[in-house]
Length: 223
Image (cartoon, rainbow, N blue to C red; front, top):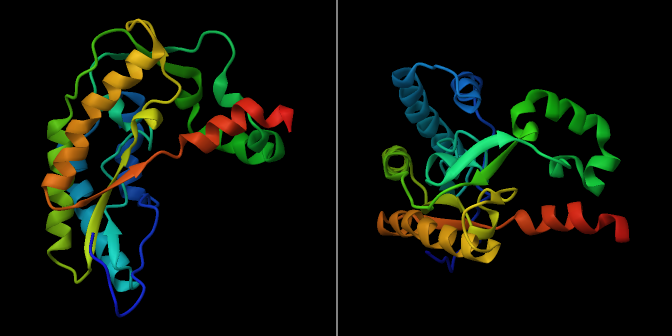
């Protein structure tokens, strides 16, 4: 990570609003429906170029690719990069419906859930050995971003990644002897992604935002 003795370098959290034309490809991807793969890849590269240039134009020093290549969600994108998981209909209490935030801002979440219905009625179940299988997607994201960085004048670029505890956080383990064993294996598998980003010359942003959500869902009624 570069440092500055002349001024404070500016950056941001990493994820940025997806453009409408990219969202048109992401929706069928999320739903498991057919889509134009060549069109998607072209749109993804163009979108990475555009958002990198916009960050530079606004004076951001350390920029990201907007997380545009993560086509499912911040914590669920690795479903396409790890083996061992299946998506199944939720059984029992729905964990997505709990939390002080949902209680206070019910109208907002009603609209959000309506737009992302699959995300709140399905769960991710570990049913087999977990290994990293997303090298192609990862290399695509790195290549798109580095190509975009070559066209702008910024200090550095970073790719956000989910930390092990935030990877598929609402997962259910049906394969490993314990949840701790499952988490340890996720960490070992995701190290492939973390190391590849660093080895490419980019910064890696290790995002473990799940702690706040877990507190909100589990403990808000005790406050």
